[in-house]
Image 1 (tube, rainbow, N blue to C red):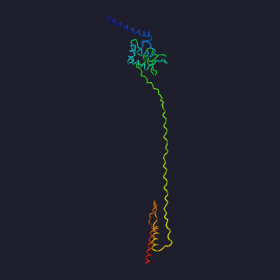
Image 2: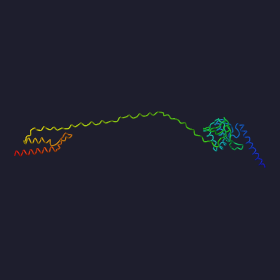
Image 3: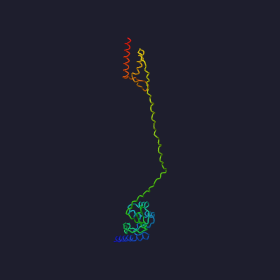
Image 4: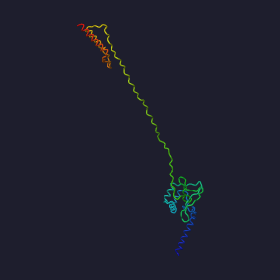
Length: 248
């Protein structure tokens, strides 16, 4: 019986504590169901309260499923404070009277201080520290500005190579014309003597007539016999034989 009374008394005390919790939080300056125990005005104050207050640290760690230190690092690296410029309804998580973390849709007026990401997405209500997501949104990588690199030294375009005129070889001079070597024939004797000496001289005089001289480049004459020369030679031989017979 005594044990039952004690359990009933403890239960009443717990209920009273949860019932008085909103009043205590309101007295401290935070609305009922807040994740925070005291109001904050900057991201630095929010991170400091999470680090120093074990109750606040346990709430954020349980809600996001990560250590409180990672929550602080996330808010420090990617969070920034901003006041809403458009009134809208947002899903927001809070602590109910039983200590459970539940969500509801809450209307946030213009000017409400919130923690936003780099792209402007609200993730937390700064007045109470209540999150708007079950897990921390993945940060959006910041686009690196395109920087046009200006070359320190402008490379000058190398001058074109000098145009070398083609070497035109002069044509070799034409060979000097070779003047034909004309054979000057001696004048034929006007009178033919039938003496042996005269006949010998006549035969010698007829030798040039036996053929036309072929003139070579060195000036030598190659005698080529021709039919007319052969006939003249035979005629002279016959005349010589006839003269010899007459004398005998």
